[in-house]
Image (tube, rainbow, N blue to C red; front, top):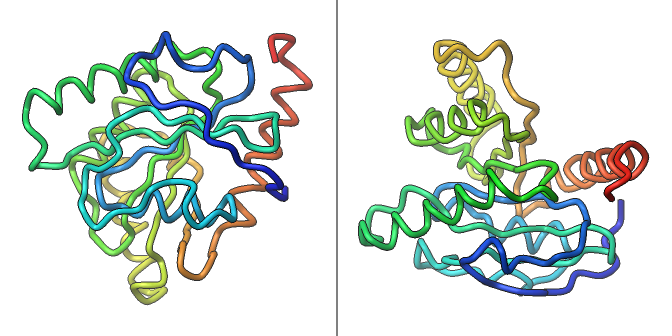
Length: 206
């Protein structure tokens, strides 16, 4: 898939105010400072589509971007940023949960994980929530240019081990990416394209 157009549509914290268009949506979420904005900009060929910041926790709303006029990329707030107040964190959690559990247009979420670090409990817990809630998702390992392939393989193996220990039958589909080197871009966009084709073919609502 080639992205020809990427247009910002709306930001809000109320799921009922999300776009009414019945187009497939792909949500991107991860811990703060995981490189989400850089990944989105790399995928869409726009340097400033998603706002990048050295300050973690900057994304605090549900952001919809219309891609190629036929699907939405949804940029969600990060989870697990310690310096966000408890009140703010609870509000984030509430509308993120609302989005995942009520948004009919969502066909897949991409859970971003910084590959530089060993398996983090907060990521395992979040993915367990997604699995228990039967929300389809894939894992996107980010910042792959920062460590060796040996370490990448080792960290992915550690995630597999932890997930199996948490009663997962298999590892979710995953991608290894680098926004700096555009690693994984083609694979990720091809996956979205394949899912879109299935969605439009099999679901009369879309």
